Length: 309
Ligand code: AMP
Image (cartoon, rainbow, N blue to C red; front, side, top):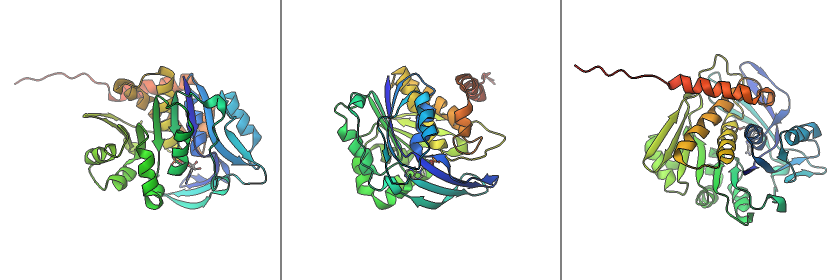
């Protein structure tokens, strides 16, 4: 099937307790596209970079079968830049710098060849931009998933509410779910959020896994306990890319298949955090992914012996 990714393609500078990088390649759209490229889909991307963005990375995306017609390159302008510093627990971080640059006036133009796309993954961007992509598609994709963050809840809540009404799956973390719903219990939060539009909700809990809610059903997937977490940047986007890449390639939006998609997303995210930036994702094979999925299956698989008094 075909899958359109919309999201930032960026430069990041990251500080963790293990080290620090200068400007490296990042961006939600980059992580989503790299993750979803492990699956057999026709892949499209809508994004924007400046003239300073390395052509080699664009070729890397093309090598992974990502059609980059929808990736605008703005002459004389600079690529979006984000910098963050992780705390010792690696679960929380401070944003040090956000330079919007080309993202400030980003107009997401959809190439004709992308019309009729089957699946849509809206990475974290302004809710107005996310909505305009949906409105510019002549036919509604079979499933639309979106990510968002606290930042948009703080400054553009009305716009976010309008966009949320148009999507099927919302993928956010636990802190964002609590802020959005004003509920501490994630079960209660999931009800409030699903009343706002998306019929499916995925709540990511970092090293504590992810929850999927739909109607009265709930599914929990663990995260793989890793010896070393080097850099969590992009793990959430990688998860979303793996999730939608799997859904699109299997063309099955049943709850049972979403469970498998979550395990695929979690497995890819577990690779992402093992090295800085996109390094690890760029160097694993489909076989590595299969082996890791097997580890996930074994992690929670057990036989129950009933003891009756
Ligand atoms: P994550 O770790 O999954 O939250 O995603 C991190 C990625 O999101 C980084 O590579 C950043 O370039 C990108 N990013 C951070 N802030 C924004 C923003 N306001 N808009 C778009 N992308 C962003």
